Structures are given as C-alpha cells and as structure tokens.
Length: 268
Image (cartoon, rainbow, N blue to C red; front, side, top):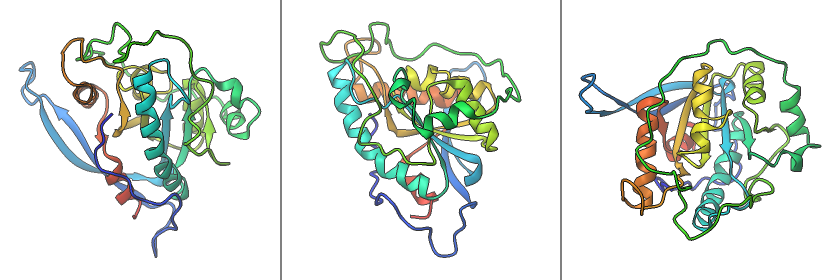
C-alpha cells in the first residue's frame, strides 16, 4: 500500500463558492516515457490534464470485506477507511461512483445501484486497441501473500467502511461498466482498489480492458496495494513491490495521481 499524501477532507463538503458541478478537474498526473526507444531507460514525466466532472467516474476495484491473505486484509482495512471520505467527496461534486467488488453480486442483486448497471443500454466500444502487455516487474505466481495463509474465498460483500449511495453503480462486469460510461458520456475513469498487479490491472472492468476500449484510465496510486511477497522476485519490501507495479502501469497502461491532488482539484 502506498500511503502517499493523507486525505483529511470531511465526508461531505459543499461546492466552493462560485463552483459549478460541471467544472473540469485539473488533474496532476504522472507517467513514464522511454525517451530513447529500446534503451530501457524510462523518465518520469508529470503533467496536468483537465477532466470535466460530467465525463469522469471513480471506480473501486475489489475492496472486499475480507481476504484469504491476512496481511492483505489488514492493508485493505486501512485503505477502506482512507477511501471513504474521498468517495463521499467525489460523489458530492457530481462524479459517478462505481463499486466493483467481484464475485459478490448476489449480495447486491436487488439494489437500485446494481440494477442501474444492468439496465444501461448496450454500447459497442468506440475502439478496440491492440496494446502490448509486458510482464510485471514482480513475481506473484505463488499468489503474492506475505503471510502464511491458504487461498480460499473469504469475501461476501464490499468493505462496510466504504459508503454506497443512491446515485452509485455496482458491477463486476466490464461490459456493464462500459455501457454505463457510454450512456453517461464518461470518458475518464479514476481507478483505486486492490490488488494493483492483479484485479486493478486484469479485471474486465479495470485498467487493461477499459484502456483497450478507449476509456482514459488514471490510477490513484496511494489508494492501492499489491499482492506481493518480499520473499519472491525482485526481493524488495512490500511497499516497493507496489511501487514497481505502479511504475509498470505508468509505462504501459495509464498515468497515475495521488488522492491529495484529486481532493485539491475538487476544490478542497
């Protein structure tokens, strides 16, 4: 988990004086560029990009109530508490919130948030990009757990610390998520959740597939955590393993930002 800048905003805040709900967020983003192709030398690049609020959504990936890996579960508890005020603030500013806790849709099957996603009209991707998928810089082949636990399904719902409100959506299906984004004219997708090297990258609703479908993804890098065991390659601390995956995403998939800058972009 990347702790980054702390999020001190209260759960719900009014719009700043003179602000409008359709204002563009001025996002401070970070990416990586191989300036001399084939050199293997990557340079960090920072830039700003406007993201109109009406065209922006915030997706929470697999923030479950529990996890089979106790170390991962503890870090998710910390993340969930930090995400809650950000979710509330983003919603209050008019950003569409999408909760994507995989494998637990039955828990939400009768909710309006779940039905909203199911009822969005079908929308074919505007493009289907053919993008390369280089190998990750960490070894997660053993499951990535840094505590001595055996894999099993431990989750039943999204983490209770994360608020779900009436205008939100709930889905673990990439087609449904894409349909809602197109229905609402949303082209910018802020992504946070777990785990950076697995679900955040590889779910059908997450960075890799959405990028291939032409959605402009942005990873909130201090609101994510990897499944990485320091006893495996490249034998670095857990937090450094997460950083390496974030850098990989910045190289090949999408830029990142920190939550503190997002909060300031929302006028706090």
